Image (cartoon, rainbow, N blue to C red; front, side, top):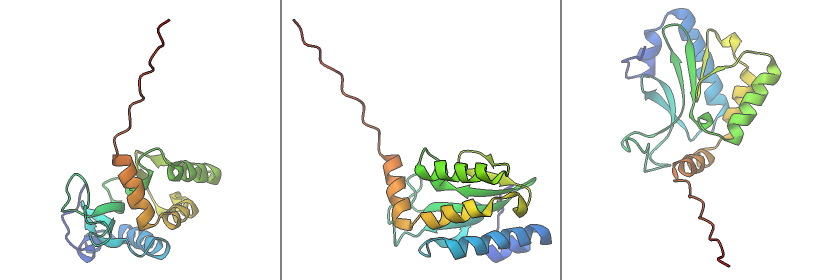
Length: 162
């Protein structure tokens, strides 16, 4: 259920108190532990954290008018979701995040880059904090650009004729 709210204040006002409190808790965590160059705003119907065009002028490759999204927090119909875009491909961050979570004993309900949960207490917050603190805007942009690069095809081996 994507929100039509255009501001974070309107988004939060549209939520029941318990859901608003959960989103606020995560917003505070994100602001405290991630690179301050990321900018908070409403993106794709959720509270999002983006690389501003001033730091990465090309923006999101599918829609360059949009800034490059790094993370998002959303209240869905039956759950909450954290969208951690840097975890969407095979990377050291993904491996470390999943390993941290496994050590916690908490259940990780994760899609490609989306962590789903029913309440904040279900999350392993130290793993999320470590992830947020480990990614700078510069590092995220470098990772993003590397993922977009087409993979080089291996050269065919030439056989010697004897």
